[in-house]
Image (cartoon, rainbow, N blue to C red):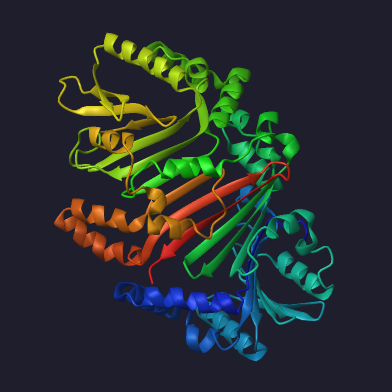
Length: 506
């Protein structure tokens, strides 16, 4: 019905079926995955007496749905009410499958009774806890743990969808933003979920996020030529968000610039288009709400230790966009060579001179506290390095280049980034393929080079760890080249939409 809180439908078109077969073939060609799949089918047959090929496939249709009408049932001690509807192409064979399930349950001492509702037979398991209830109507097999949901579904099937979810305004607005060709669609109405989350959320956090502004979310899954893709759309009430956020605009070109400043050896890239705006809104909430006193105390402590006020000495020169990058680094993380990684932050600067003066203020305070700071020049720009107490290892380095503050955890990373990067992430074929078909990354972007990550991990694991990893994890990651997410927001329409892509080889 239109009041349904959670709805998932699986109804792939021919394109999705073909692409799914490709994904399935890629994975089942891996012996370990094929063995795990065969074991799953064997366990299914053992537990239910069902043979997928003989008992299910002959009648299984092209559409199935999972429905949770009322999320408020999650609050109670009983299992939440769920309804599964599966299209049947052959009622005689689906009835035989249901009879087999019933027979298995009865052999374990479970009793059933049969009822009739609007000329439809309903079979009810006599159990006080999470019973199995099923019926078949209008070419759909209905399975549930709540007889009322079965009866409601029968009514809906016979009145041809009057007051159905498909006609709900929010449902239509959200699902219209999802791809037309998709294997499955999830819709989540936030009205009851928001109330539940608000009850369980720390009061201080509720002051930072107006959860009641959100209306609902749609999520689709699809198999595409690049791999497996999830698209999502989140609707919210523009009148319930701060005025400054209503004017927020994404900056895809600025985020793209950050990818041109980092190496294509990047393992993980996380970019944000409106870091400054987010920090400003968080500060306003902290100043306005007494329940956030711990956050205020923490900011005051940071100011005492560094001499920097977040609003006056940092936000004043921030531009907006920023990125954090994880890179391979032989020098190790903060000098720890057994962790061959390094971090790099790329932060947009609107006023380089002000930023330099505030960084000089920070250096003076750190020197007073006994820190060792060395300076250098790269490409005509000053670079500072903070050393560990004995002056042997570099803990961090920073400098400003092309209106971006670069902060790295090693000399090598800073030296590489302060000069022109000859082979940047933006030109990486893996990166370009991972983002090519996704929405333009205005709000945020995440990219993980799984290939490079697995290669580095393989070099760092001990023989025993590698053996276990190769057996339990690697077979499932082997076909994956990259993982990526992008998002953009239309504040006037009150809609954020984005996509998640797992890029597969082949």
